[in-house]
Length: 341
Ligand SMILES: Cc1ncc(COP(=O)(O)O)c(C=O)c1O
Image (cartoon, rainbow, N blue to C red; front, side):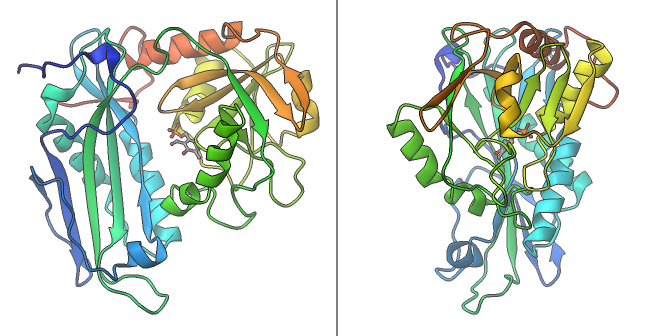
């Protein structure tokens, strides 16, 4: 199969329409078989649940070409499970997890020409999502839903070298203690837009959100979980019921423990202790792990030892090992790499 004629290494992170997407509809209490279609347009009622009451959830993962030339997807079963949790919390019907993996696989296969080649640094981003599609005017769950999967090629995250990030402690909260912070619902991202636009306008890359109840504990940023490394080399990640359970973070904790032999801890992390960590990184599908160089708390700066030019040594090892596993250079734990035949 011939690849598209694209300058893969100069792609950014933006939407590029690919050939096929998967669509399945839920009506009268059941999902239909679903189809692959070339039609990228969605037509729904002006009063659809998603448009009126934001009843929508989504996922994000990557497909890429390994060193061996195989097209693979990283742990899609965990995205399926997380989307099922998201759907339940918003009173939406679950799209069956095995069918989710099947739909994602079929969509990637149908867009094989768009999967960036090995070594380009680019990947095919996969976006499954679902939304309430029929009319609801009273505040209640929709009766009908649509589940879709599209793909778009995205460029290497660290083009032009690694740039450690500068974060600010946000005055806005991301998630309520018993709210929806732990699921991937569009509403969490809509309410973060004001805070991120404002952070960018003030020269910061991201917001560090504290827990809304006490504003003493580190939660996450708008799009990634935290990993910290202590001065004696222990990997620490915040435990909270109101952060998204990042698949990358969960994978990195396994890598740290089983591949690098590091001690790992998932526990509450107080903002007061952040200044004592040796390294700080943000983990998520897009970058695997992005180093944080500096955190600014209302004018007070916390600077991590690796500085603003490079990753800290443990962060670098975590990054190299997980990307090595993903790209087929290092043997993966069983079940992590889903091959698209
Ligand atoms: C709020 C939030 N936290 C964390 C993550 C990282 O999760 P994952 O590693 O599953 O991409 C994401 C991105 O999906 C996110 O949006």
